[in-house]
Length: 251
Image (cartoon, rainbow, N blue to C red):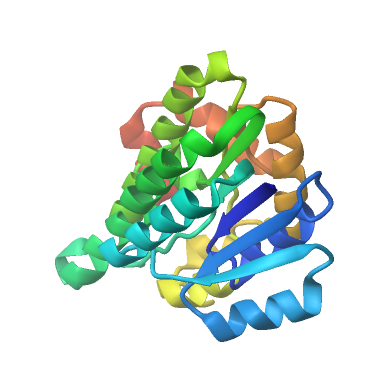
């Protein structure tokens, strides 16, 4: 059975990935998030192929072990693994809750690493791993220090893993969008008015990001960044001093 696994599938970009992936050559989609009721709503309203709802907190040891047990039992042919779950918290670390900062690392970095490692034995030639990253991965972002650090990890992880898996013809793509009008902004504390600089940034379209991100992965791309503005920022981050980029990127 050829499947796609999507984490963080209950809202925003995750929903768009779910809609887009159903047009690919798979038999079933596994959608993962904590909110079972929301996943069922999405399945009932958007499914055009067989869909398995998997309510799970992937930041917990119990969640990861449950996924391992499911994979071991089903032994699916994973054609797409989309690590989309992620979270951010806006604000200076000196004023932050230590648990919230640690939770970002658990979700954005550790969970992606473990889920990918669990999935690899069930992936074959011409399969795809898509990791939702961010423009924040290109340079440290003040007031989003931990978030940007976890996304820098994901970018590095994706590039290194892509090289490791080249002999298996499994492509790994980091998708690095700018801000999108999704639940992420409110949860991160980035509602309009919180940061004048952030409010001025152009928004990326979640639907286009998902569709073009999958397309980029199938073309063998290592990184996909929507919009010329962010492509330029990515290029500048490679040539300008980090100290200057931090000032330019300050939210």
